[in-house]
Length: 273
Image 1 (cartoon, rainbow, N blue to C red):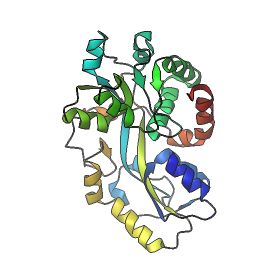
Image 2 (tube, rainbow, N blue to C red):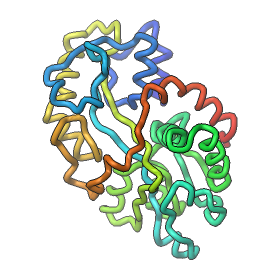
Image 3 (cartoon, rainbow, N blue to C red):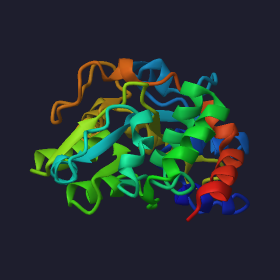
Image 4 (cartoon, one colour):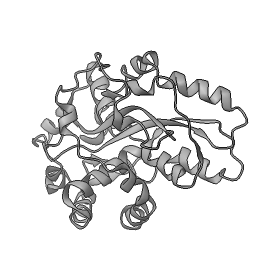
């Protein structure tokens, strides 16, 4: 969110040459404003098709993806004699009043992927009703996607809506966390890279993008992400469930990008604390 705002503000006089590892929905906002330089990197055929721009000369290439997860501090819930939530709907139960933290979607890609997932699961009206009910249980909306999980791991809050990687990492480091993947389906987002139109260092930018889609780069991404763009490379360091791809909602990234300003304005009006 913050990076995108800076890039959009610099549109007339771009300072960046390459955008690396930004949420795809943010890059698509730039694409719509004709701010991305088309380039077909070497080896792009090794990437899964959903990780590559559909244009004949791609304007962006995906790197990896992350998915929503709920970080639950089992010790803190046991203290309060409360059950572990298993679904998104469970989070609206009044027993969890002020016990949940969720990322602010206006400043966190992880927060925004949750909001758009709920809209794609239930439809927009029901999703707003859901968020209205959820808001009654939220103590704060921090500006980072991993912060709610860190807060849950430290026992500052029992439940943090976050994403999978920090959840499994903190759990592996000994935090008393249960990682919950809600049964209704998971929001997800892709990290992607692109060349900024107007760069004066085009050949260096192209070399960088060639590296970003390489097998070696994807093997590095796979240390920190549940899914990567390169066919056949999987995360081996974390306990991600094998059926994770089947849990993801069918995500319309173009819709999420087009509706971003409208949805975030409405969200801020209703829920900015």
